[in-house]
Image (cartoon, rainbow, N blue to C red; front, side, top):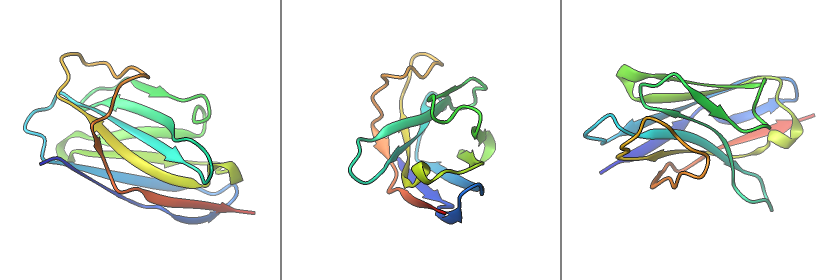
Length: 126
């Protein structure tokens, strides 16, 4: 059974930084995509970025470019989201997701993710 466990959320002032972590447990292979998503109150869920497990190419949403960095520790099956220069509009529940098995090493924007974490809240205040 695949499980994703996020951590690292919290409250931070505008301009501050946070790093979220997501441990992926249970995949019996390495062929999967991992992604970060977020959902603010009253808004639809939106993608933040994605990366193939063990890959180096990262796809970022426009809202994340320049401020957010996705990385991973392959040996620990952990995906990270480093967020800097946080803004009030970054306040949301952040979710980690995984999609696999994949036959390709790319993670297209319209990929249907079949495993989700429970989410971790990020609150940015002025």
